Image 1 (tube, each protein chain N blue to C red):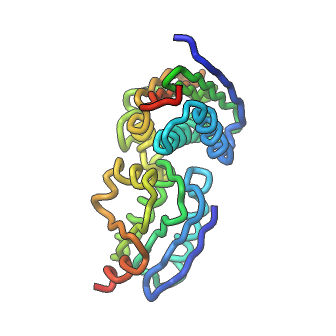
Image 2 (image 1 turned 90 degrees about the vertical axis):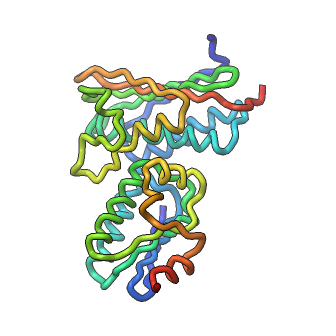
Image 3 (image 1 turned 60 degrees about the horizontal axis):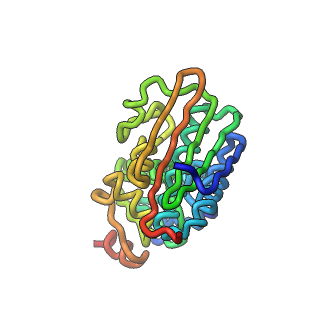
Length: 144
Length: 113
């Protein structure tokens, strides 16, 4: 399926960019006239993916995070990619309440939130190379 | 994001304005913990009336404060979360263990009982 619109954003893995990234993704999705709840879903999931890249991918070092958004007739696909340390065990990372950083008072709910707020979440990762998380959302009543 | 602290008896009221994510949650943690350390706070109310967004990092900070308050024998309540915030709380199962109220007064009244 061909996207009807695409955009790509690159930004530094600074925590102040978490809100920037989720607002940009929601603004791009707004072209399809989603509901406020669908926009909130997108903001929440993007926030989780970007926070993971900052905390776990780059472990708070500064690197580049890329966000690729593809808009289809009635859906959006958002990929958040880093070139950080990667995930050794993706299945474990996706478990609710699992956190690799118990020292940091993390809730361990990041992937669980992404899966619950979006329709599908794909994770590709290679230790030492980086991680790419793709979030899919189908809109119930898109404008066109 | 802004954090406003006020006291009503042994209850600390934390009024947050803005978005509660990984970036902003650290200052909430520091301010609330400092207040709990220095004064005779027993219970904590988080007023979410002006919070328009929370993700799992924000949730982590609220859950962390809950654990601390419980250890000290106190209670915690959340006031007036918007639907997005409520959904993150619900997903975590946190809604089953903390009290959610429509306004600060009803939360305080329950603490007094």
